[in-house]
Amino acid sequence: MSTQPANARTAAKAERRTALLASAASLFARRGFRGVSIEDLGAAAGVSGPAVYRHFDGKQALLGALLVGVSEDLLAGGRLVLANAPDPASALRALVGFHVDFALGKPDVIRVQDRDFESLGAADSSAVRSLQRAYVELWVGVLGRMFPERAVAVRRMQAHAVFGLINSTPHSVQLHGSDSAGGTALGGAEGRRGRAGIPDETARAVLESMAWAGLASDL
Image 1 (tube, rainbow, N blue to C red):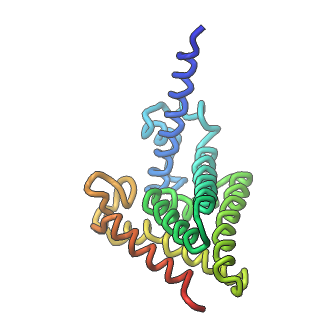
Image 2 (image 1 turned 180 degrees about the horizontal axis):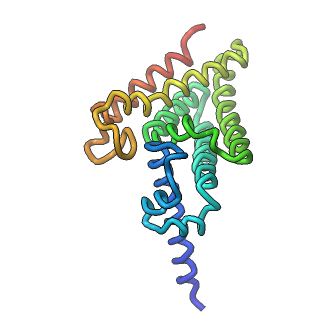
Image 3 (image 1 turned 30 degrees about the vertical axis):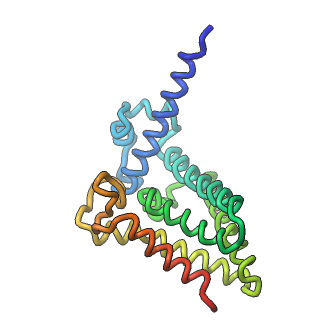
C-alpha cells in the first residue's frame, strides 16, 4: 500500500500551518493581537476561519506557536553559530551577524513580541522567557571568554543593550518610512529595500558595526 497520499496530506497540513503562522505574524504586527479575528487569520492563509482550529486551539495558541517557535529558532541558531566558530571573537561576530539577519528577516515577529507578549498563555510565556534567557546566556558566555575580567552582570547588560539596538530596527524603519501599511518592514521585491529606502546590506553593516563597538570596546 502506497504511503504517498498520507505523505501528501502531511505535507499539505504542514504548509497550511506555516501559512497560518506567517499570516499571524503579519496581521498581529499590523493590527495587534486583539485587532485580529480567527476569520482574519484564516482568510489571510487561504482557509476558512473554522479550519484554523484543525491546526491550533485558537488565536492565543497561534500566538504562542509563533513566539515559542521563533525563540526556539534563535536558541538553536545561536548554538549552531558557537559550534562552528573557531575562537571567541569569531563567535561573537557571528552571533552579531546572526541576530542582525534575524531582525532584518523577521521584523513582524519582533513587533508582535514587543506589543503582544502579555497576551500569551502562561505556559507559552514561561517557555519564551526560558528560551530567550538561554539565548542571552550564549552571548554572556562568549563575552566571558573574551573578557574574563568583566562581571557577569555587565556582560548580560551589554547583551541586552545590543538586542535593544538591533531589535529597534523594525520600529525605526516603520516609523520613518513612507509606507505604513502591509507586510514586513525590510522585505519585498525592490532590491530588498526597507521603508526608509535603506538596502538591507547597508542596514546590516551599520548594525553590525555599532553592535561590535558596544560589545568589544574597552569599559
